[in-house]
Amino acid sequence: MTLRKDWLRGCATALVTPFRKDGSINEDCFVSLVERQIKNGVKLLVPCGTTGESVTLSEAERLQIIKLTVLAAHNRGAKVIAGTGGNNTASTIEFTRKAREAGADAALIVAPYYNKPTQAGMFAHFSEIAKSVKGFPIMLYNVPSRTSSNISAETTLRLAEAHENIVATKEASGNFSQVMEILAKRPRNFKVFSGDDATTIPLISLGADGLVSVISNEMPKETAKMVEHALNGSFHFARKVHYKLLPLMEANFIESSPAPCKFVMKEMGLLEENLRLPLVAVSDATRKVLRELVP
Image (tube, rainbow, N blue to C red; front, side, top):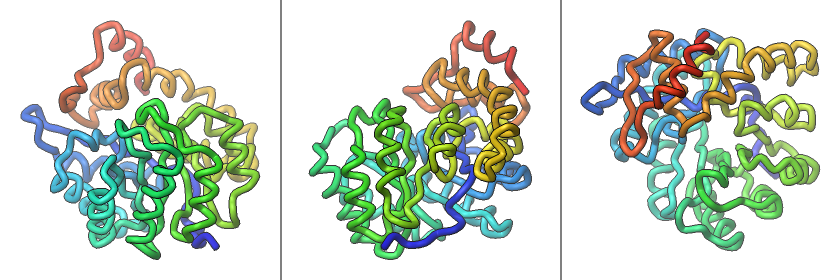
């Protein structure tokens, strides 16, 4: 049976990683961003995901970011779901163990990118990881637009049934039929999170448990309230917030994320607009669009 994790519900923020102009991590800024999230009602924090530019971080940097998040979160009653995934199974196991030792409450593990494993390969990859960190909760992360491969509903369900510590999935496939199959057939206690801000309300109406969000970096209070209203069945109020946020939700992906989000956050005075190559700052045309949407 899937491990029961009642705290795994609601709005989770896929945290950006603030850099200085020289490319180093601005740790003070990062901590202030984490504290801003918690102050505004976000209780689930996801460092070192796609939005955090994890693939451009060294292992030491990723671990330090996780430790900073844990320190800030656990003093404030929040939980940390650390991004530990990669396309090398052995390395992913090693780093997931380190994240657990650093105090993370769970791991977010993306489908292997570039390798393009078959469904049998997907099952074997996640199974090895789950067996190597028994008792440590794992959230699968399915994002075909980034990985060029899909974790099918059948494979997700097989993994959920086979390993009690595979407790959730972040679904960013955009395939509603696939997500509905998971929702309809999932084992008890298995959670499904939307991986796209704009699909959150419809997926919660179908039974999903929350959102791993980009826009909550910019507007944490509003995003957390939107998810809370939806989970409570108050869809009238949830829709109001959704449509208020929708233009920015969509604009955050005009160019590769998190570049648009970082521009908006810079305009809000929250960080410097620095990214690590191969990502670059947004174009002048995109800046013009985003400036109209700055909260």
